[in-house]
Image (cartoon, rainbow, N blue to C red; front, side):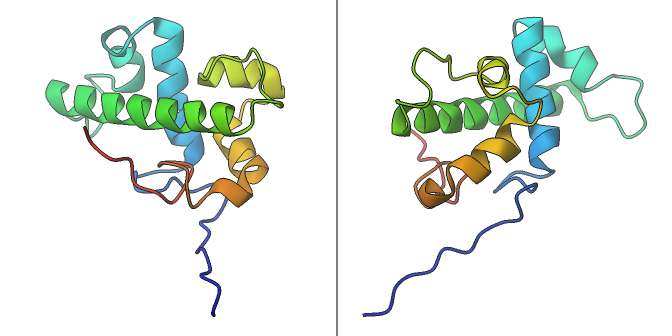
Length: 130
């Protein structure tokens, strides 16, 4: 029986979201530092920026990224409890635990064998909507 191969993304590219993992991580980190999506809105999507998106589009984009990243981080912390015992499944929590500013890229490398099961933007499995 042929073994199913998993097509791997480059370590820097986000799965099923536009942009790189670093760009997605920057949005989520800004939201975590600001205490919420609305509080981080002007930092992430300045209204006077060239090519600025509308308010609703910016909020929707930010929420989508935060939900996806937090789901992926929770999955990794759950799949690897011995490595992440006591670590909050947030970008800021994992930055401290891993001593890196590139959490998503680092986690994609650490969790390579789980990529087929991990949700976007890290893994290759789409997150199922409730």
